[in-house]
Image (cartoon, rainbow, N blue to C red):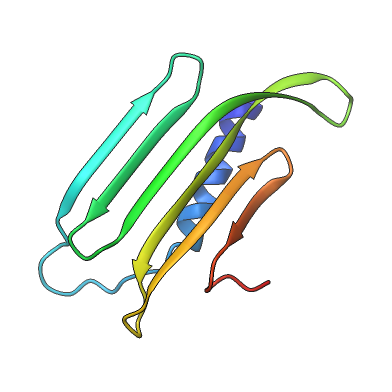
Length: 111
């Protein structure tokens, strides 16, 4: 159950960090989209759109200990996304999420 919660929180954090694009005219076409799910719980996905937006992410199962020193599995997520900002500059954000939380680095992320 904790594993599902960790994955859900990581995905939510990444979605919240992604820039919002106003909807205008035709939807942006998806040029490439891939998803692979491993039976053990790991996964890998990526996509690219015609406006230059892309994202790639990999989740791997890892053993960790909780506050009570009990072992459990967590999904460690690593990935990046790229987009063109309002000024027309391409930006890339690298991130990872594990038992320590969500961590992101990029030009638009405050330090």
